[in-house]
Image (cartoon, rainbow, N blue to C red; front, side):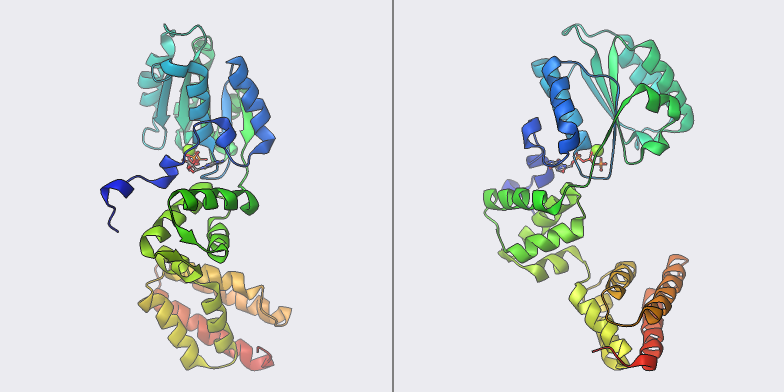
Length: 328
Ligand SMILES: Nc1ncnc2c1ncn2[C@@H]1O[C@H](COP(=O)(O)OP(=O)(O)OP(=O)(O)O)[C@@H](O)[C@H]1O
Ligand SMILES: [Mg+2]
């Protein structure tokens, strides 16, 4: 994909909230965070939750608001997935923590992004640093799962659990960005972006940006094609054809998805799995189909050829469909 100079910025960064009021969703925690900022006080904090829902964004806003113009010298950001060993705690973080801030009278802030990637040894070292330098520095740890953080650290932190953002909250944000970027997109396509992003705001904005480069008017199909996602309607028709014993046509659909559109076999399988629940066939047949999907999934995971496995799956659906002959 070619970006011209003017477009070269990534929308997730361009539209990263600068103020707490621009953060969408997370209503359950925002009042407390607003109070921290107002009082210029934070405890050690653990932000836990799924990807792309505002954890790092809020940590940055907190630092910028608390320290104002002095924020860069009082804020250290490390990404634990790049530097996950004990050395980073012993050196970089400890050095930052040892020295009291000269520009402000409150503790500095150290953000440890993706802290669940820290080894246990590194977490033990962090625990000691946290205790020893509590007057100089406060930590904001962000993680996907709080269970990956050792209990003594959890108990020293105020834990905030982030939620996936609801579609009805993401939609106005996407429309706002589309309008700012002069992008024409219909409601159907916006709904599909929400379906595909599953509450992950970063993912939703990224899909919006990618589809912007594909077509002037973004529709449902643009989204599926540019993002290489399987269109559920095509998958549904492929499954139905196989259950109706029309193996040739069903296989043609598979060819289109795998070869023409270049979709990933595992993604196709995931969509087949979703579609099974929507089929109007008896429960026993659904169970048998699920069994075959699980088998196919396993074989692909251990290195089986995607094309052969998916074709095998369709042939098995055909045998199942043969028994009841009810799929319309
Ligand atoms: N709650 C939100 N409100 C507004 N924009 C958001 C929100 N959450 C995410 N975004 C958008 O997605 C981008 C990435 O968000 P952020 O870095 O905060 O995610 P994260 O929760 O830290 O995810 P990860 O677990 O992957 O680190 C932001 O720059 C912003 O554009
Ligand atoms: Mg983050």
